[in-house]
Amino acid sequence: MAVCLGHAGARVALNYANAQPRAAEALAELEAAGISAQLFRADVTDEADIDTMFTEIENSLGPVDIVVINATPPQPQKPIEDYDWAFYQQMLDFFVKSPYLLTRRALPGMKTRKHGRLINITSEVFHLGVAPFSAYVAAKGGQTGWSRSMCHELAPFGITVNMIAPGWIPVERHANDPQADKDAYFSTIPLGRWGTPEDVGWAATYLASDEASFVTGQTIAVNGGKTCW
Image 1 (cartoon, rainbow, N blue to C red):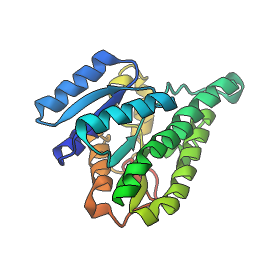
Image 2 (image 1 turned 90 degrees about the horizontal axis):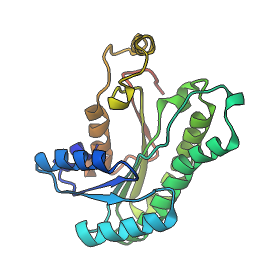
Image 3 (image 1 turned 60 degrees about the vertical axis):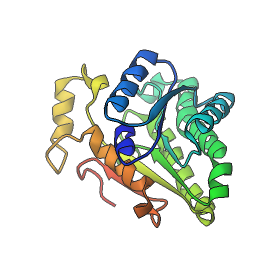
Image 4 (image 1 turned 180 degrees about the horizontal axis):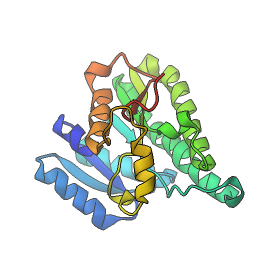
């Protein structure tokens, strides 16, 4: 998403929390592509960290016009008896609290400029009711409902709120996933190919663009046709 937005002309503020070496690799990739980008460290479930990050971004890159909300904790699949409330709370912190805090910090500038793009990365799991995955699915449902409400609240200010719901798009963190699981999922993709990070990136770029100024409160499913609505 950062690469695609950068190619479209955005100055990219790339946030990370812990994995500084991997963040540096991502920054190097952006810079090699000729994209203006900087790294900013913040825990996006922490209000003070978010405020500091936004201030640093505004001082270095200028006003924040686009926020792509994409942070996540680990996502283990477990029967409900094996979860505890602390894990549910962590999911809610990432998928409800974090979007709320990020949006609240971005809004003063967006409202003043009468322009803004908020893009929540949700998931097909909410629409499919994937199991055993109740904590993640519930939190993604909360994020989806919150986004739908915010799109109405912020529309008078020229701010759009949309969602991208990717399917399973294999990246490096899926390297050790069982091949049988990959094969089973692949067999259900109507378009008959795996999705790529670029598929998600160009969807985000569209939603961030002026061409999407009349699109708000919508979910774009980037999953080869597994969900249709």
